[in-house]
Image (cartoon, rainbow, N blue to C red; front, side, top):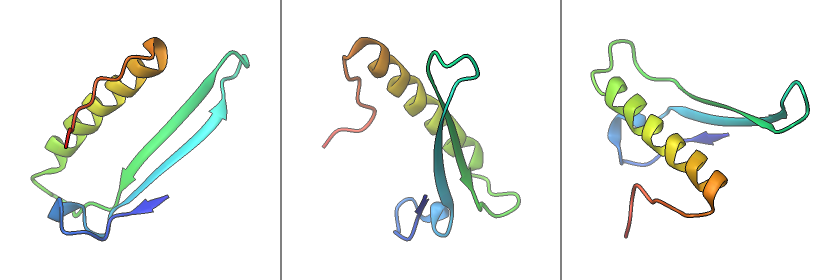
Length: 75
């Protein structure tokens, strides 16, 4: 569990991000249950946040499958 306390991005302040890993029903892999909760009702940035997580999870999946990282953010 991760509670956002920082100023960036400001609309994440006070939101909670959780990851839960469980075995798949057939035991052949791992299921990742990801949640990002606590946004204010009607937050206009929620759609952008959802799109960003979609891109990040897709890149994480591809990295797990290929071993080749494709960073979304770089320093």
